[in-house]
Image (tube, rainbow, N blue to C red; front, side):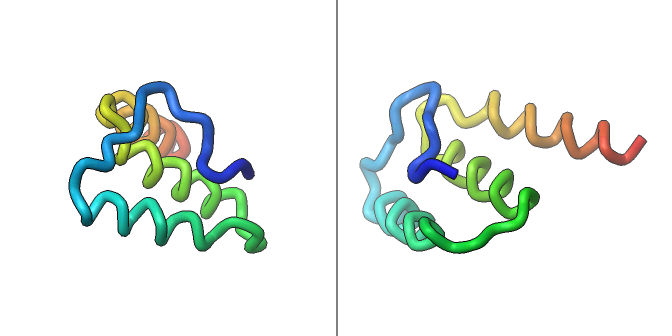
Length: 68
C-alpha cells in the first residue's frame, strides 16, 4: 500500500488535529496489514480530503454489498 494513498482531492490539514491524524496514519507504513485494514486506512486518509463524502459513501456501499 502506498503511503499516503493517492487522493482525489487535496488533503485538508488546516487544523492541528488533522495533522496529528495524518501523522498517526503514516505510522502504519511498512507494517503488515490485512486487506481489510488497508481498506480502512485508505478510508481514514480519505476523510482528511476536501471531498471526504464520496469515498465514505463508496466504503459504506461496499460494506452493504458484502452483507448481501
